[in-house]
Length: 335
Picture 1 (cartoon, rainbow, N blue to C red):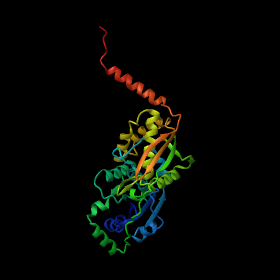
Picture 2: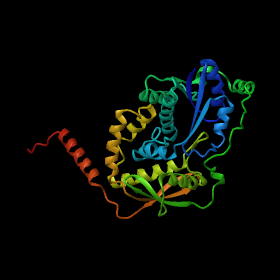
Picture 3: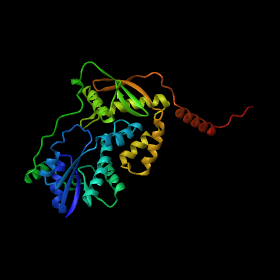
Picture 4: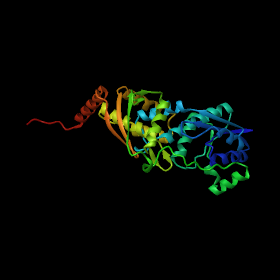
């Protein structure tokens, strides 16, 4: 029997997708759930997948891999969605694609599936990433294909005996009205572009992100919209961008291109290798501490460590740019 590996979130869409895919394709469904530190309880997600009809269910702790190989790379590049919000969701899709391909190889599956309902760049990025890694795999998006409304999904789930869980109202960030009336101040130390300490306390990257997320979220920082929150990433990007500007006297000119690469799903291509090489060279000079004020949803840089100076990299680049500009300018003729 054919096997399909499904990216399983535990929600209604992917729970319904398990029997729907099994019936439509006469296949065994293997569920894969990733713990990327998203703050959701995943203890019973395996049981939910099996109860919905999955032949097997894998729950993978990828917090370290996600933080170091995806989030940190984007942070060093100052890559933002539309130059304004962190790209955690887009980066997460790329890691999901990687693990779908990995498990498909282990399970000898001919296809992978995901719960994206979109028809634009979001879904295409995941599809592109999968095909970059294994072109022969089929990619199925059942939520897009089945045409069911939400009431129809609920009815379908009930007809198959799938428990319907209430939507969680938990959020990572407090509303400004519920935030403390006193601000929090955090100092973040970067070493070669990597955050290594908060308020003088060194900690592993995964722990730093979790701790900073708790602090920032409690002060309402990082709520991009009603459906997307990224408290730690919001603070880290603000701090890194300011530090890099200070030590290189410029923002990273590749940040927009890096963001477009992530958004387009071209992570597993030579383009990312080339961009990473440039970014990593620039990060050799991005060392120092930035102090930020967090207050009722606002994140503001208020200071930086003394002793920072412009890097030779930034000076050399500006000199080269100046020389190039001069060569294009009309020569002055002395009368």
